Length: 69
Image (spheres, rainbow, N blue to C red):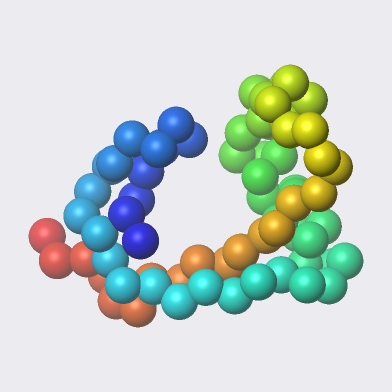
């Protein structure tokens, strides 16, 4: 995984990670709340304009270790 901003611009070195797909409605609600808190209105506008389908896949990304400084 490479840390990046909302536009994909790299912000640091790549790190090894594991990913878990959120599958339950409770997990999806938590993911939506976190995304809404971080990106708010900007994300909602982007989704309305850019996304044709009304579905999302949510992933929990966990770094294996802290990146070396």
